[in-house]
Each structure stands twice: as C-alpha cells, then as structure tokens.
Image (cartoon, rainbow, N blue to C red; front, side, top):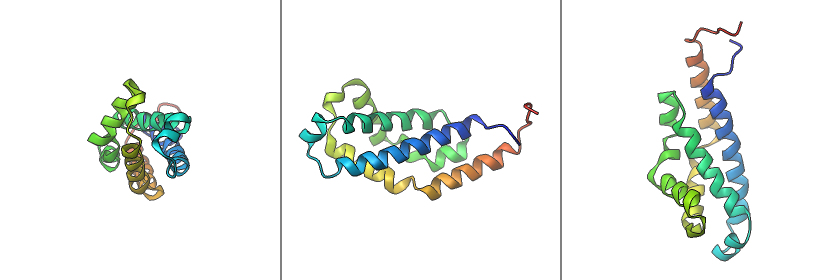
Length: 130
C-alpha cells in the first residue's frame, strides 16, 4: 500500500516529540527549578508533553492507543493542563519525573511495535490513492 494513514502520521509526530523530550530532559535534569524557569528548555519540554497528549488522543487505533496509554495518564494530563494554561505554575521536579517516565516507557521498541500494528491494520483498508 502506498498511502500513509492518519495514525501513521500521528505516530511519526509522537516519535519526533519523544526524541525532543529525551534531548530536553537530558539538558534540564541537572538544573534547579529556578534555572529551568529562567531558560527556554522547560517551556519547550512542556510544549512537547502537551503535543504528545494531543497527538495520542487523536489516534484511531485502539491497540496503539493502549500501547501509548501512559501518554494520557492523569499525571500527563495535569502537566499538560498546567503548562498550557498557567505555565508559571509548572512544578519542574514533577515535570522531570513525568519526562523520565516517558523516556523509560515509550522506547524505540514500543514505537516499532506501534508502527507494526498500524502497518497490519492498514492492510485491511482499501487504498483509493492508486
């Protein structure tokens, strides 16, 4: 099949945001809350968490949504809501914990499993692009 499904596009964006979170998390890990507040990395990290949540809830595949369910956990939702609505109220120690959990849970292997699921599901669709 030659088309790229909506879920495949979303998964690609999730992968991109996970990589950004990993990079940003490594940069803010040794910093104090004041240092994070004074810089731009915290803001970028909070935006990536917001993006991950928003992307994950748009997935149609139940199986992929289940594999990525930690991206819609209550802690992620709370961090997303605070960072989207009251950025100055972000607790950076909690944000660091959330990011560590994302980095530990959503690995390259998990994303590959999700891609394989989507490829399998795509075979059940009719490709109208050819």
